[in-house]
Length: 126
Image 1 (tube, rainbow, N blue to C red):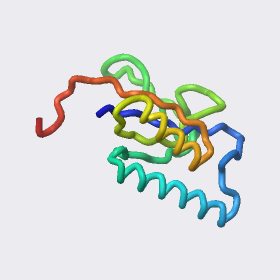
Image 2 (cartoon, rainbow, N blue to C red; image 1 turned 90 degrees about the vertical axis):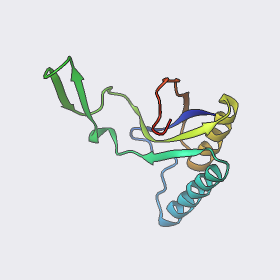
Image 3 (cartoon, rainbow, N blue to C red; image 1 turned 90 degrees about the horizontal axis):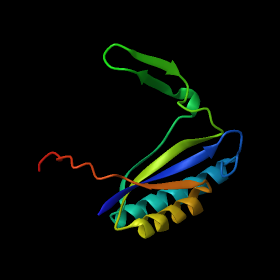
Image 4 (cartoon, rainbow, N blue to C red; image 1 turned 120 degrees about the horizontal axis):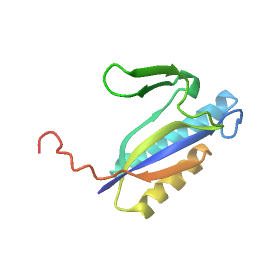
């Protein structure tokens, strides 16, 4: 089984897909909860979360040792930013894309699908 990142993109200044009334928010959350329950039943759901906006970001950069520099704000100034994500288990890219299509239907935001690289790392208990 492979793991994929389904990155949810928000566009700065656009309200597309953002619920503006209590009823719309309730419907939106109902779709998200139903999708996450479907992913969980299928064994695809590993982890997911919503992120604060880019104004809450802190970037750590620099060389080795004490040469690190910490700055406020996102690493890249861009109109689009990652607003949330899912980590899913899928047999292949086609299955991951199928889940991404369902996420788009539920939240009406663009989704970037990226496979994780095999790290060769030994997991705890192995």
